[in-house]
Every structure is written in structure tokens, then in C-alpha cells.
Length: 403
Image (cartoon, rainbow, N blue to C red):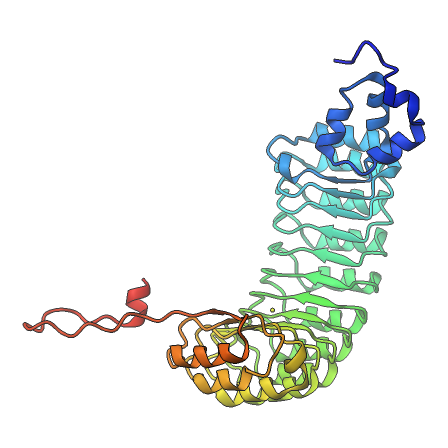
């Protein structure tokens, strides 16, 4: 395994401190290879100081609990960042050993580690007070007990992802936000039990919040989100796609209270209209992306949006220099006039126009004369075939052709 001549030329010329510094820039695979070169390199490559940031996603199928335990013993207090995303073989026991050995951990991703339960969060709370970023997305056994534990031992928490942890309710959110005032990013996508009361707690206790994702939290309404807007003035990114109960009141509240807003995703929020976007465009000067599908700005499936709403958006202060992406899929009322209103948005890089049936190729061509580098994603169905002579041939609409 090791060479006979352990004192190779490079080892004689370079001091161990310099070799150790070089090794600190290597990834996990390269470090393991270096560890097999010689005895001296083995010691240097496996030195805990080289293992401050570890991402095991590429080895997720092979990672079992004992691997995590061994890594934690080797790295000890040196380890700052660890990603076990997708490592289905890792459970509570291994993570307890990890927490005991790696007490300086600041960033930990357990995304998709479906074996873990509230026991893991208890361990993190007890042994890892410096934890700042924690990703528990798709860890569906996580409950309010985990959030209560984190609130007691991880007061420095800045970013938490509990997307698809659908057992979490307002009680867990309340415990968390009251003891973690520095929270900046909160991902609650798919937490379907959350109601307005949970949002009121966030608005009251998270003044530093920058990013909030509430996608498909279908029970929330204007009442809870308005509290967020009033309490979280630093908000830059908000996703409420699939929250069908919200109305223009949210856009007004964002315009009045969140001037730093850059990304807004409101896909499938079909009650939003031009009136709300007028207020938003007037006050949120830093908007870069909107996703409006069916209603990053996302307006997809926003079926009440018209050319006048796009005119307000296009003439707003943010549009000329900042707006980069606008998604208008399934907004049936907009026409080529909307494209005319967007031609002065010089930073616009991409526009989505799928199933906008009143948009024409001519309108897109005119837009490209002003924005030659823009990416336009649109669909034009073939001309509907005429009925056959016998009248028995079925006519096809656009949707049928797509399907």
C-alpha cells in the first residue's frame, strides 16, 4: 500500500506544514488517494484539519452510520460543514456520535435522511451550540419536538429547512422563533398543517428574516402573511406558490413594508390582479425575478393579470435595470401589448409565455428587436385542422395537442 521509500523527494523539500496546507484544498476523494501514497502522507491527508468541509452526496448509496461515526472521530472539533444529503443509511445513533465528537459544526445537511427522528435534533441541541444552518428537508419523522429541542440548544440558528416535514405545526414554529431571533432563511415548503398563527409568530420574532418559502402551505391566508410583511422588513425572497387563498392585499403589504424584495413566486395564486401588482411595482424597486405562473417574478396561472398590470410592472423603477426573469405561463388575458411594456427592461434575460394564447410570433419578434439576447419560452400550437368532408373528424384544442 505504501512506498518503500517513505522519505520521497517532495517530503524532503517541503516542510510538513506546507504539505498540510496544500492538502487542505483537496476534496474527499483526492485526500483518500493521497492517504495511500506513503505513511507520512497518510498521516497528513487524514489530519483532522483537512476535513473541515465534507460533502458525501456523491457517495450517498454507500454511506452507512459507521462511516459517519468514523469521520466524526477523525475530524473532531475541526469539522465545520457536513452534507449527508440523500444518505438513507444514516440514522439517529450515528448522528448522536457525530454530535458528541463534532461540537463546532456550523452547517449540517440531512436532506432526505429519512431514518432520522426527533432524537437527532435532541443530540444536536445538546452538543452543537454553534450550529447555524440545518437542512432537514424530507425528514418526515421530524415533529414539533425537534424544533423545541433546537430552540433550547441552537440559539445561533440562521437557516432552517424543514420542507415536507408535514407533522410540524404552529407550536413547533412558535418555540423555534422565540429562541432563535437571528433566523434569516426559513424553508417551510409542504408543511401543510401550518396556519396563519404560525406566520404571526414568525412576523413577531424574526426581524432578520431574508428568505421565506411557504409553497403549498394551503391553509395560510392574507392575515398571516400581512403580519410577516409588517414584521420582516428585510425580506428579499418570498415563495407562496400554491397558496390559493391569498389576494392583492399581500402585494400591497409587500409594497408598503418590504422594499428590498428581489424574488417573488406566486404561481397558482389565481386571486391576484393588476391592482396588487401596481402597488408592488411602485414600491419594490429591487425586484429581479417574478414567477406568476397560473396566477425569479412568478405570475404563472394568475388568470386575472392583464396588459395593464404588466404595464405597471414594466414602468416601475425596478424593471428597467433589475428585472431579470418574468414567468407568465397560463396568463390568458395578456397580449402582445404586454411585451411592448417590457421592452425597456434592459436586464430582462428570460420570459416564460407558455399557453398565453393571445401572444403572437410577431409580438415576440418586436420584443427581440429591443432585447436581442432575451430567452423567450413560448408554445404555438399547430393550426386547428379543418373538419373532414364527412364531418366526423374531431377538432383539437391547444391543450389536446399538448397532451
